[in-house]
Length: 173
Image (cartoon, rainbow, N blue to C red; front, side):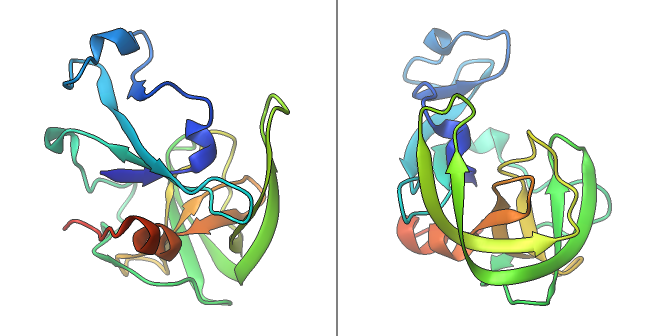
């Protein structure tokens, strides 16, 4: 299993697959090009921007950008503490500071078809762009402690602890 931003899964097909592949090829197994299948979501009013996806064990990876330490556990974000992210679309490792450890924010879908008020946290200084949603956010540099999942380019992020508690998951090391 892995977690990502819930809004990335909103309105998506049951299976996630790589570009230029067909969801119908995924079937009940995991064919070439298939990433995984939706297993749960917390995306709802007063919820969190989190989706849980099932994937084949052979796709499991602890790889992150730059010289960062793979996540080995999780904790709640702490205000004024350092935070770093392995940004997927940007292709970089960037750091900033947790500016709010309990933050309510609004998220509007790109097609204006849905709107949610969400609970999470906020950071300053991590320069994410559209497409970095779902990237992991960890406590300070190289601690290996997951604290969140990137949600907006403005700094809001879902708290990993909300996902861990709701889905009864832990970080695989």
